[in-house]
Image (spheres, rainbow, N blue to C red):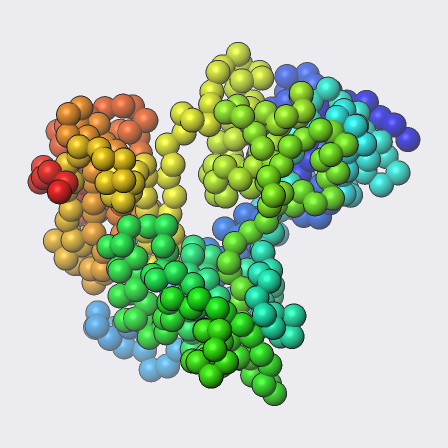
Length: 458
């Protein structure tokens, strides 16, 4: 059966539902196709459940370390079933709320199933053939299963399946020292597991500046998380009930033996079964859909939003993709990806937040810059909370005094970074912040103070 619509939105992740609702409010007749769960990765297997579980892990950690604050707890027991149930309750509230809202939205028709192109304007969903002049792809991504020797011989976990555990692993071996691996590693260490992180690169979070990576290293060592970096030939074996991860190509070289292995080495787009060729949609060798500065694909009238376009795999960037497309189509705007200032956070405890250029990028580009840095040991809020790992670092153009970038590692970093983000979007010089009065005692109040100590980056 063939049905015609004005617009088709494939995928109900972070961008899809909001775009569908806004298109529908303009009078368009919109089809939304979702093959599995509304809310996408963020709601079902990403931000929502993991941050809920991180909160449980934080509570366990606070209880164990309370004696340093004069609070004494005789024993701490983590029930992973209860942790999971709490997280799932929050997930279901978000997922069901989103689906119910969208189903009640006027001019929106929901189709459940897998969509595949038959032509640039038509997609098949089971027995249904949908046609529209506009197609918006928001199909998300999933964990990569690396082609490491022996990986098929073991029972491994991914960032999705590990959330289903109901018993705490005795020894969790985390393959990958990026955002996902680090968050889960600390979480399960606080639940009571022994944890080892295995990373190919020379340091954890290798995309961050070295000083930020060092803070993460110090935090994890303080929590007795084992770190094995520079593992250039990771391979696996099963030995009875245990799993063995080799770090070097030489079989006699060091190994890590654990009860569970988590593979956290990246994500791949869910574009395999879209039949992109039938629509003339270009994608790279990994399957990420190529888009221009306004998120248009190589096929006229087809857009790609969120993780599947490879333009930053964050929930906030996916939502911003929706805003760019919707404003351009419906409000006559001319918004572009290149106008976006990169900003992200790593939600370990304490968190890391970054905006704009790193120090490494500034040096690589040869920019004449000023830099200011203040350790959290000189931030009253951090001292009072007993959380003095980390620093505030801000980079400024030496001539224009425009802020080039900033990294905050430490308590409250994920919130404090936003005053710098706003100043950068407003294209204001650093004195906007140095002349601002912030609330005491907060981490953000030290941002003006830090900027008052700018020195040449040498």
